[in-house]
Amino acid sequence: MVMTPARSSTGTERAGAGRTGAAKRRGAASSRGRRRAGYLMVAPSLLHMLLWTGVPLAAAIVLSFTSYDVLTPPKFIGLGNFVDIAGDAVFRRSMVNTLVYAFFTVPVAMAIALLIAVLLNGRLRGRSLFRTAVFLPQVTATIAVALVWLWIYNPQGGLANAVLSFLGFSGVNWLSSTTWAMPAVIVVGIWQGIGLKMLIYLAALQNLPADLYEAASVDGASKVRQFFTITLPLLRPATFFVFVTSVIGAFQSFDQIYILTDGGPANTTTMMTYEVYKSAFREFRMGYACAESLVLFAFLIVLTILNRRMIGGTDGHR
Image 1 (tube, rainbow, N blue to C red):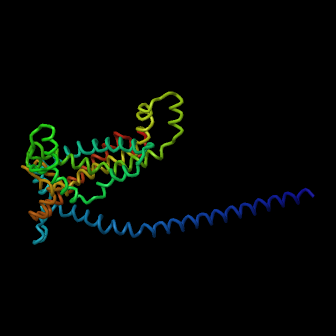
Image 2 (cartoon, rainbow, N blue to C red; image 1 turned 45 degrees about the vertical axis):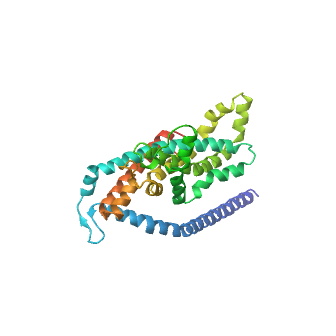
């Protein structure tokens, strides 16, 4: 009479353990199946990246140590291309120009985009129309944008000089002046880059917890104080993403430079990407162009690491 319940209890425990083990095995099998399905779904994208990103990157690294003009086989020269880059005054000028361009376009466009996102996140009549209007330059072909700005900067009858004339100032030869060519290009970069940044900030703002703002309002915090104490800290991950993508975009600027100034006047608007293009497709110095592109890549890596340390990474914590 005493042993029967014990045997029954032990049998129940064994049955329960068996069911638990079977459930774990089924869960493990299901997890493996999901992983395999995931690998299969991302395989085309990984294959695409391997073929069109990984292979060209490896080829660029190899060719950067060679002298290659497309017509003759590559000749290994070691660090010769990098030594030439160190002594290339035009490429050094392009590095400075690219840094200046990124320094002004990225933070200014980010600040304007954040301000517009905050305004369009509120209860504003016709905000959908305003959002579309702000984002429209982002989806417009860069060449089309550059052609419009060519007309705006036209010294004879362009909109910019017409505005200056209306205000009582003399016109400026915008794109042919060593003083005004770079500011003119920077304005175009700022204007075209606001749309995407605004959209990212707007999406981030709409995901912020409303209870924090309600609590701050109860405590008597003004809208300005809420912005600096709640909104900006919570937007740190979005700011990190926007900054990194904006810096990469600024360092890869080519189309508007090619159309607006062709790197001139006197190399005042020559960018690193334009120098890579010129070395590769005008001078046919492919090995040298690959070395220049690696220098550009190194710039982007260093700037990304520095920004991650300053902003604190994507998790919003330092």
